[in-house]
Image 1 (cartoon, rainbow, N blue to C red):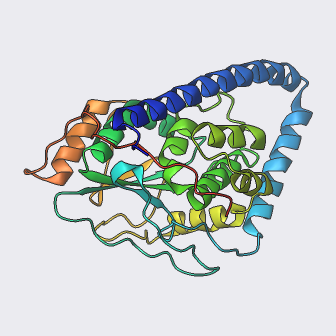
Image 2 (image 1 turned 180 degrees about the horizontal axis):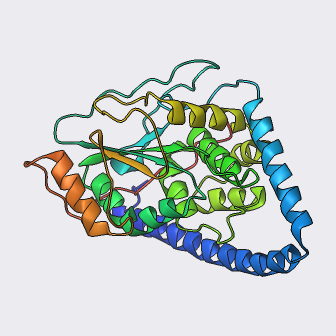
Length: 308
């Protein structure tokens, strides 16, 4: 049988992304309605605030006492690395109490971007909104790898924990869909900080091609929740599982490193500032095209890995 034309494959992938964005828009509308309802409920007085504080304390205690468990595959460095054609670097999962392993250095001329994110962090969303196109350009042109480290540092009744667990599930079960999933979460943040339900996280995964029952079960069961706690603690305590950086630990999110140098922008939403930083960190021989033409036959990401 003749192979599908590369342009058709790209069109299918783009259509799926457009559908995912529309789904995200619908979910944001649902969240706005929910915010209005919550505002009315919270006007009931101090009692609800006390209950909320108790809930946060209980959640933190539960998170700190979770038993150690194996981590997701493809995240041996506590992050998943996305390279050419949006294919994830394959690694085994971390065993309980095992130390994360830094990935080997990239070939000369290939930039290494590392990003630690909390999916409910507003600054993380602002960074992604501004720089998603640049990150895609770096991958599309083969000039960079992008490693995403999901953590949960916000006290929001477990919302950050659930989102990071969902990301770990996609990394484990459908790794070549991870880049799209990560982008979708960060560009579709609910305004009230309560996060998404498990059902919404499952719907998001399906919309980017990670709709297997294995992914859904992983998300709803919180399979990697204890790993999220451990990875977060490791990131905050240091040292970071990354060679060639002077940064000892994560102090907040997003933490963005380019070839080991920390990006500390004057304006987190300025894409030009980030592009200039990438050029500076990469060296004189590096060039950046923020809007490259896609390579013939490239599909821009990975599909389902199956119900493993």
